[in-house]
Length: 260
Image: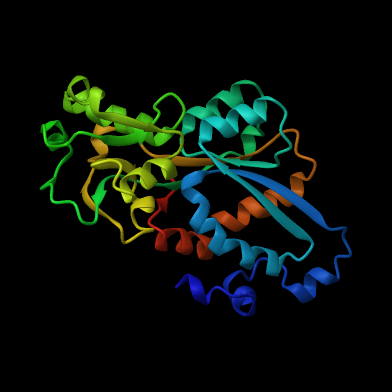
């Protein structure tokens, strides 16, 4: 379990990375990395961060979690970022088109699925996305499709099911997948569409359906080094850490799948 990933076990889990003892011999100046990452990664990365910093005492990581489009825009505007992890290819593609990322460092780090959730105490008998057209369901929370990847995927599902026009009057838009989750958790929405990983973080909601993969584009999380990074080697080290088998096992515990 994540709780076992302590500093004392770091050298066993990550034998390819320096331990605190060996890192001390490198005599490098302390470095602070800035990682901009999709909001849905927050819990998993919070579990991994202490392990990384314990095995790399000269590298401290600051995180900026938000909707992928928001992070993309910040990078375009010159924000001080070393590494970007998006919840969709679209945002990374746009940065690559502007030569703002190191395209050779880009890889699909993780994958995810789309879940339909309801409040834990909901009395609505929802078992499929198609049932959202029922008149008893008045408010459906989802990410704003123009800026939130989870909302874009949700819109694809509804479009491919042929029910998007019927549902549009019911939509309550969130500016991130976490705000969508909060709307359902608080009971301010009858149902919501989030990632499977988000659906697992609270016992105040329950998952009633998983979107079939053929109804939306693959949900992948590309990672890439920012060209303007002041610490490219440290950023590569951190990216390799996240892609390591042991780190991937932690991501799996949080509901993510391997990169595709």
